[in-house]
Length: 465
Image 1 (cartoon, rainbow, N blue to C red):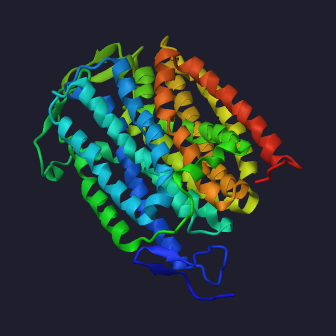
Image 2 (image 1 turned 135 degrees about the vertical axis):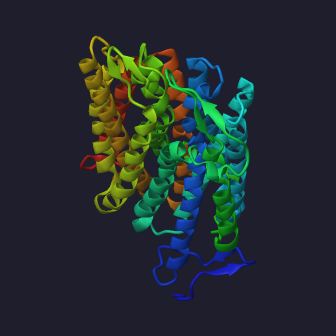
Image 3 (image 1 turned 120 degrees about the vertical axis):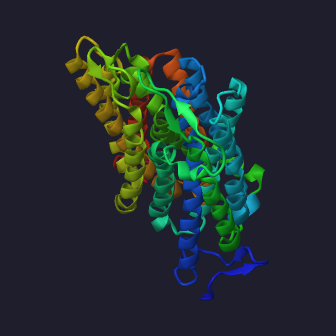
């Protein structure tokens, strides 16, 4: 047996690459690939969810959009990501990891730059902001290319950890952009391009902000990511043209794992995109009826209750979900993914049921409204927690269920469909209302628990994983 490490040909494509052979596997290259692609994936999620940090404040910056228009705008990156993931899922064997990650990182700049320009003056037509929201979906589309290509570099025994770390840290991009935006927009020194804006909140005096910072600060990092990828990454040759990659659709487990990943990542991405708007409309300034005081000391009240500033809470859910994906990934390697997917589904059923009563705020008194908000917040965080656990466990299952070439395609496909989460969540909340839509979520999770138990988790299951 040859003990010569994998070599490169033409400076990019690897040869003699077999991660399952410990004697020839280039561990340092695999982990370098993981960290660089994870850095770029985090920036991709920043670009994808940047609109979710900006859209709730558009009217405060001078735009005059209706509540439904804002929901649809926040849903658009999800629609785009789902469609674009169908493209990115077939790119790893065609472009290779190096070209795909480099070019994708540069493409992220388009929507990020556009949002930075258009928040500076409330003059953009609705259709233009919808186009920018769609282009932000490139960041979501990248996931279905980055994850399969990374899986090529690791042996099966480490794929749960590697993919969990990459997806989890990538998911932190959601919290990162939502957490840092309120601070970035207040730092005038960062506003190298453009001037200040006046942001008006209910009952308060206009606040001077530099909202373009929320977008522009990420562009140099995207350039750095592209350069790192181009200079340090390599590509694994996978023999699979586009037609061959679609043979995954004749496999029953492709469709079953798609249902499970909709339950987990579809929930995570959908709630992450709409969390701020939903909280604002239920318990924030969108539901305000009284303003006490005036000027800078004004307090927005609902039934005597000072409503929370959603900006202080909106990052918590995605942070918990992303953290769970990272922390539970090593456990899925040790204990198997199916068991944790089962726990994820049961936890989602319980946490969604706990949250539903809080989706109809009781405005009879300040006490009942405050209690409702606490229940809403804790329930939502629990939903994010269990969806994050399921994100880790399903990505452990897929490399165990499918052979290597198919596993990459299935990971890309399931991720593509689940990326529609923000779009369907926006439609569901807008057309059905929060309560019926969350009830559908319980039914979906119950179905997934049944599938997981029968197909993957029970003793003697056909596909233990």
